[in-house]
Length: 223
Image (tube, rainbow, N blue to C red):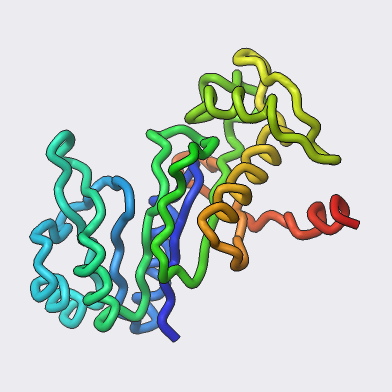
């Protein structure tokens, strides 16, 4: 079955995408890597926006990273035209999409226009970096201003509304608030499928991922 996997959040999205790509490619799948926002383009990335060229690489190498070169930063690529991506779905077994941007922060609070989920997405991974717990919120949470504003409005039994100060240290509570915000955004755009939430940790120069058990806290909150 074809999978279209979108990866959102902060703290290892690109690393996760490349690991998934390697795993699926080892199993004999043709893997397309692209973005709906912006993403660093690895060497050999197809920036031609030519569906025939990308299709050839998928058939020959079982792998292709593809996008359009960003005019403001040639090291990055941006989204393929939707009609090109949909054409390529016929030739890729697995499509991996970086669907969020965080500018190298370990955590991100999504704005009203984020994340940018491709409509055909079958699987969604939310990455939440944990290695900056204990550091000031304003330094490690991308779009912290958005978080400050919205957390004065939103309220629920588990996470009552309150003012979040720039200098307060990041805790698990802040990460739960970010998770709630992502679920709210996804509900707004009509994505109601399962979200796999991964906590990422730095281990030297490597990043490790572990699946978060968020379903239990949801059941407790709504019981």
